[in-house]
Structures are given as C-alpha cells and as structure tokens.
Length: 460
Ligand code: ARG
Image (cartoon, rainbow, N blue to C red):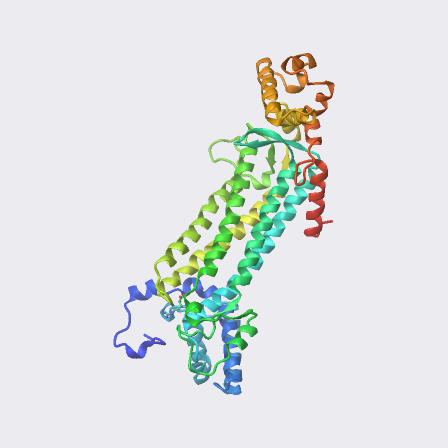
C-alpha cells in the first residue's frame, strides 16, 4: 500500500471500508480540468513570488499538461486509495516529475483548492444552462410564430376563464425562462470570487499573491476572508435554487402539455418522434418525455434539499461533510440540462389541433368578462355590470346557449341598458379584439411581444 500524502503521522493505514467510504474520486474526477487550471495559476504565482524557481514552475506546468492529456485520452489511472481528484493529480504529478511536484501544494490546502475547482466548474455549467434556456425560448417563440392568430380558452382553477391568443400563453413561458436566466447570471456574478490562497482556513504566512491567481483564473477578486472562503457553499445553494425554479417552470409547462394531449382536451398533438407506446395497450400514444420532465423536477428539488440539509449543522470552516456537495451539484446540472433539451425537442415536435380548439371555444362563457366591460363602457359601475352579466350567464345556462345567442329582447329584460352594439363584444373572436391594456392578450400587444423576443433572441 502507498503511504498517503498525509500519511507520516499515522502508524496504521485506513481500513478498506473507510477508504471506500471516504473516496470521492469516482465522481469528483470530473473536476480535473478546473483542478489542473487552478494548479497552473497557483504554480505560476508561486514562481512570480519567488516561492519556487521558474525552472520548477516549467517542469510543473509541463507535467500538468501531460497529466491533462493522459486524462483526456483515457490512459490516466484514477486510484480510490488517493481519495479525490486533487490528490490523484498531485500524486501522479509526483510520480511523473518527482521533487518539483512536492512544491506545488505550497500555501494551498485541499480546502481552498476544492471550492476553487467547484466555482470554476459551476461557471461553465451556468453558461451551458444559459445556452439551453435560450434554445428553449427560441423553440417556444417559433411555435408562437407558427400559430399566429390561434385563440385558445384561457383557464384559471383549470376552469374556463377568458380567451387567450395561444401566442400570448407561449410567450408567458418565455418570460419565466428569461427570469430563470437572470437568476443564473446573478448567481454566477456573486459566485465568481476566488477562494484560492485561503489555504486550510487561516491563510498563510508565505508571501503569496491571491490577486494574481484570482485574475489568472478569471475571478472578479479574491474572497476577503479566508474562513469564509473555505466554509461557504451558499453559491451552490443559490445555483441549485435557481435550477429548482427552472425545474418547477418546466414541470408546470409539462403538466399543461400532458393535459392538453389528452383525448378530453385534444389541443396538442405530439409527433411520434416524441411519444411512446404501451407494452400492452396497442392504441396508446403517451407524452412520456413531458411526464419525465415533470418527474425529474423532483430530483432537482431533491438535490437542493440535500445541500440545504448538508449545510445546516456545520460549524464554520471546512468539514468533510462538504464533500457531499458534489453529487447533488452534478446531478442537478445534468438533470436540468436534459430537461431543457428534451422540452426544446418536444416544443419542436408538437402541433396544435386548431379544429379541436376552435370547436371547444363556444363552451364556458369565455366572453362574459368582456360583456361586463361593455356595460362599463356604457357607464355602469363594474360591480353592477358583474351582477347583470351573471344573470345573462344564468339565462344562457338554462337555455344551454352562448351569451351571443341571447336575443336583444332577452338581454333588455335583464337590463334595458343593453343595445345592439353588445354583439360586438360577444363571441371569442370579438372578445379578444377588445383587449388593449399593456401586457394583455390583444393582438397588437402580442405582436409587440413577438417582435421583442425575435429581436432579443436574434430570430429572423
Ligand atoms: N475531497 C474533498 C472534498 O470534496 C476535498 C477536501 C478535503 N479536505 C480535507 N481536509 N480532507 O471536500
């Protein structure tokens, strides 16, 4: 058995069970690139500060490059007895270049090293998620463009409410995704500070330059307090919270589309390419990808919950518990990327069943609120209008007809204020034309929104 990097004060080596239990290299090896880049910056700074010679630095840099290549070609042997990605790389650097490698860990601890690596990894992960979000936004805007003018029933409480342009609803998802991006951008800016050089927790008596490593790694500045630097995982809590909110948005969209794909609604037709069948019922065509998006949102929320609980009882500075931050982080990122990609593909592979949607529009008095607005135009106080239209709705329910099918005579019996022009406000087509408030579903407002997004997302 190899003597551990920290092994000299020990008489016995750890048991196999402890070794297996404690290792993290099986999953933190994916931080290799960040770890090597951190070491490059650190070695260069050590040389600049006269803590190692320029010659040692060059040997270290060359050795790191060789290790990077051997990892990328799959030749590198990851060893569980070397615990984690940091000690695997450092120990094999020693195997490779000998003495100079032993100087690399000058004024550095795995405690500052690991959270430097994780912050660097998160920066790239956030960029990747941002790209996925904008691809989904593009797919949704394209879907909206393809369905210009299509009116759908709008629901509150899943009960028929008022008419909407389908475009307006689709753009509501795009807005949510935009705020999701904003949260990630904020999180990245707050996260982008360097822990490197905080060492174990107290900093160091050696003359290092934390500003130099911070700058070399593209951080905004070094973290001000070394204890904070090694303690903190709030940047991960923030990141996984932002992911959870994305997951919830996607889950709601998925839920809506699953409902719309039912026989009962029949609004949405997913193509075969995004549907699956049943092993027993030959007729089935299921929207599984959307169900799984809904389902996987649970994992993303679970990852956040794991991290919240992980952090809640920890005293300040590094505790080994923190090693458990990585699996939920990786899982959250992997899952959210897959959810975004599949939702994008789904959006590219659905059509709206215009016939079914149009046929469904007469039901549910979608124009009742517009009718009340008509009475307001005539000078009736809104509460009174509400009462009057309520009576008209009751009458049309008893006659099993639409509001527009009530005669002027019948309407005037409810209230003499009705005139012939009321019919301009009735029926979903007329009703939708009346919307004019900023942000409403009126067609002018909606085409302004479409223009806004086309411009913002560089479409057409
Ligand atoms: N693998 C460890 C982690 O992920 C690295 C830091 C270990 N530090 C220590 N003092 N044991 O947290």
